[in-house]
Length: 386
Image (cartoon, rainbow, N blue to C red):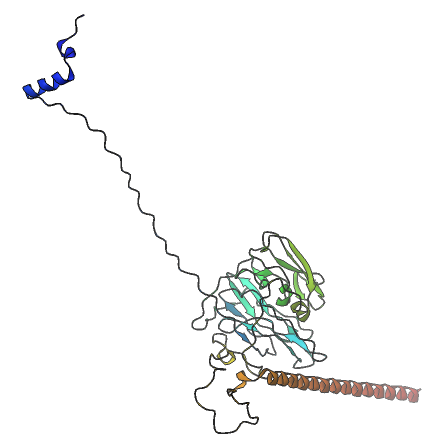
């Protein structure tokens, strides 16, 4: 087979032929690169978490009767550490050392007090998780032999109004029912189920928790109709938590005293110290309205500031040292003076307690003498009849 003429032509000849004949030879261009346009990632703006509000510590005058329950929209914070001082006198009762509602959860400073009456006993605060809110009954003086009656589920309650500027916290995280706040250093919002009458201070030395799971159980109780209604004979409680609940990932179990002053003195894992109260306790001071902030109990920001003007012309009872700024009001009392006043108050309470004790003893002796005289009179009449 003979080759064709076109196949025998050289490339140069083909180019010359194309020029002479007016034909053009085009080279196919390479494919354009594929450009993939990806949408820009969406920018998510996360609002910063609100700064924790400072803890307000106040003195609370306990009511001498069971107060009305309150319905609060969020859980109390974790417990704080407040070790009680030594017992000042016989018969004193450790009250306070728990979260109380005064337009916000504020810390009720613990202190030793004498019962207002001989038949008074201390009733610990009551916290209950009910329908995503907290039913709260503050600590108060009850009557000996009268059991605390928790608010019934049928009771209709309305959420209290928080004080202006208060940032609500998280709702209670945990099962419904009676509880105490979690140990110091725990996740805010968690609750610890506990029997009725459990002092909140029992968790002072417990491991902090970050998940639900810690619970408290009594070791010695009197149970009536599956509900604990009398816990006066409880000597200690057991606190247990699984590894999934604790911050260190280890199971926790401990038996602690059920008395508030002994439990509050237990060494804490996280030492979240309760702040000092702004003012000294005022005997007979009424509680604040639940919807109002504790303004009278807060320390003003300028209470201890150096004044810009000279002090009043009237001389104080004790002249201050040169260069010492004057103090105004009970919030600026020196620590020594406050301590002396506290000691004086304790001595006065102790003296009053001793007087009441002597009066009760004298009344008892008088009753015994009267009964003895009546018995002797009956015996004399019986002998005379015979």
